[in-house]
Length: 85
Image (cartoon, rainbow, N blue to C red; front, side, top):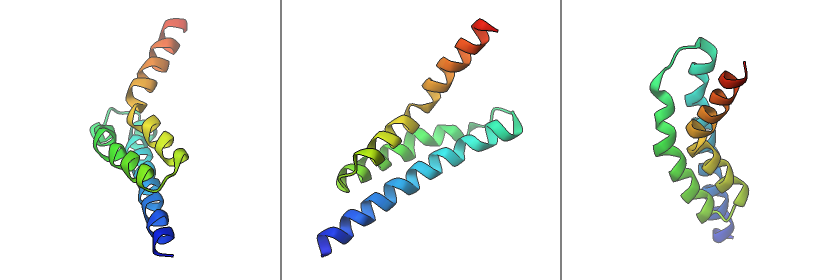
């Protein structure tokens, strides 16, 4: 039972890291100004990857990996959109 509660705790912490990572991007999209809060994704989401690993949750790990790489993903799509339009 204790093992199951620990898994739930690690998964919950991993999901919290995902939500914090998403929240750091929100000011950039709402206010359309380059706030630097997104840099926190490089610190918070790797912790979320670790928590997902300890909780044995592949979905949480993959989501945190995507959030960690979100800057590069958004820069890629932004460059594509700028090149085509």
